[in-house]
Length: 144
Image (cartoon, rainbow, N blue to C red):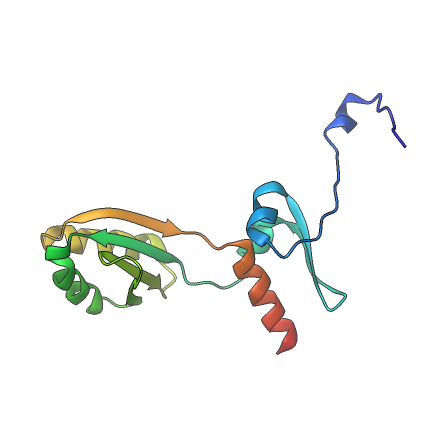
């Protein structure tokens, strides 16, 4: 059945219900979601609001030159609230989880320390929490 909407304000109010396990796609195309676990509502609302509900350690990716990798790892190992891991898929990339609450100052301290020590920082990316992260966290809470 086709319904003609005469109210211009109502034209932007369209709802489409989809069910998918591909949460990356859902995050790209949906502004609001419902998360169900075994038929029970776990969360509902804007994607951004749901992602903010989960406690997650911000993650960063730093790419350094191969010549300065060991120096970078030594500097990062001495920093508080920082967990460091090598990326096995990319030889010059370091994965970092920030455990403290002051993420901005920690990120600034990381970059400042590396640059002052002469480490060649080729790229830096701060990862955001995904809808998949939120979903897994909420499902774990319900099952616990």
